[in-house]
Amino acid sequence: MRLLYIEDNERLAKNTAASLQRNDFVVDCVSNGADAMHAARSYVYDAIVLDLGLPDIDGMDLLDQLR
Image (tube, rainbow, N blue to C red):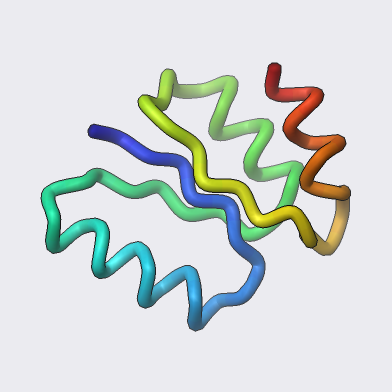
């Protein structure tokens, strides 16, 4: 399963991604809305884990755009 993990807290993103990878997930991590939009347009993900408090866009607004 391939996940897009959108999280601006570097430490949290690193630890969570490592845990997911140990459980056989493929994880692409990005830290802002612009990179998230680019990634989502470039690949079809099975799931997206989205931080609602991103530095450049509100997570709910990003969710609306991703839909």
